[in-house]
Amino acid sequence: MAEKLAAAQIGIVSTVPFGGLIMPIPLLMENNVQVMTGNDSIVDHWNTFGTGSVLQKANLAAQVYGQSTEYGLSRMLKLATAGTTPLDDKGNMQWPKVGDDANIAFIDASCSAEAVSRISAVKSLIYQGNIVF
Figure 1: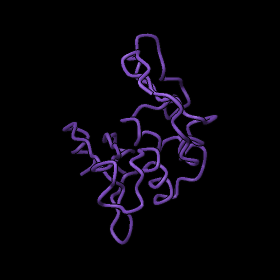
Figure 2: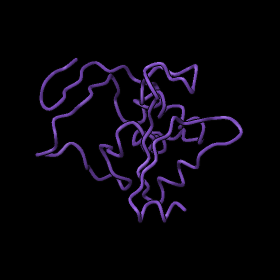
Figure 3: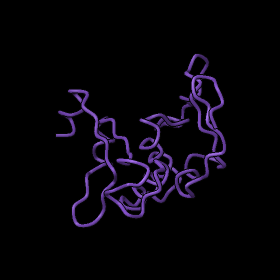
Figure 4: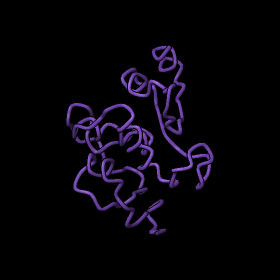
């Protein structure tokens, strides 16, 4: 099914449910299905523990799927960024590059893994080259 979703360019947005039934997010990601996370609003009605932070959801996914290594945590960042990470799966720089949209969240973290594991605070946001926070 994951291969069919990827071939049809159908992505999945998940609130990262936990409990008895869990979505196979790592399997989907391994098969190039674009998986993102989100909340249904700032107050996540599906999870009473939600903060509205997609980093918090990436952190939850890392915990649910046992992604505790630096590499595994850095891959969970994809859930919060619509698939973009500073390094690709082989360690090659893929972001930021000249010509990329100037849409950036500055956080207090030394690396992608720390951003996910510590749910780093957003310090500033730039949207279309303008500071909005």
